[in-house]
Amino acid sequence: MSPKARQLAKKVAAELIGTFAMVFAGCGAIMVTERFPGSLPSGSVPVVFGPIVAAMIYSVGHISGAHFNPAVTLAFAVGRHFPTRELLWYWAAQFLGAVLASALLSVLLPSGASFGAAALHIDPWRAVAWEGVLTYFLMFVIVSVATDTRAVGVMAGAAIGATVTLAALFGGPVTGAAMNPARALAPALFEGGTSTLWIYFVGPSIGSVLAAVTYNFIRCHEPDAEPKPAKGCC
Image (cartoon, rainbow, N blue to C red; front, side, top):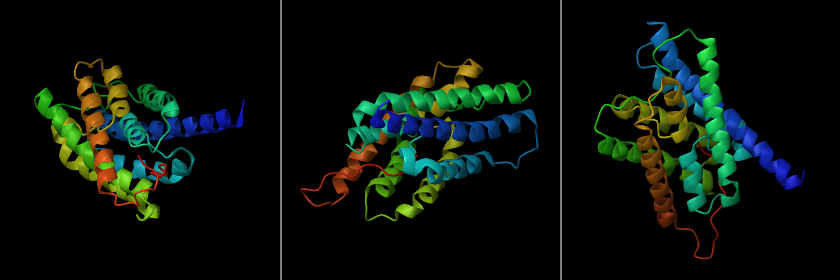
């Protein structure tokens, strides 16, 4: 195996582990709440998603960039902060990590109705817009702290984790605030409800790409400066 192939394999492994941890903790909290009523404080699920994302960013952000989200990887590729030749590898790792997490949760926890799938409470097209807006602001924070050298990079995990938590707090009751195709797909597969999955692919993808384009427009870098590669994100 060539050095470049070994490096890519390590980055892909980091993405798989980070996405696994996010789904295992976040969707696991939803499953525990449903299977053991009263075991977790009311409204605690959004507080789980944010810190686990932040923790994984600090753990592997220096290895893979810590995307953990196919929509984020797509936006970085569109914004020229990520090599397109690695796009499919990252997507494979993210989706596989999410599915493995849901599979392990199904083994470790008693049977129940929920596997942590995003719940839809508005009509589909409004849901696409809602997920798009939530992901837009998440990606806007990500691209700023991850690619702009003027930002306080050491605070990337805290800023992104806080954004995930806030979005989940007020977006969760509306669409589940998935903001992530991999996080949406894995539990939906185990629940057997995939009819609305397209919402969580289309909305976050559009929102994240628009955010990357917006930040590149307002960045105010030198005219001849090349965009920096992403160094840490969600």
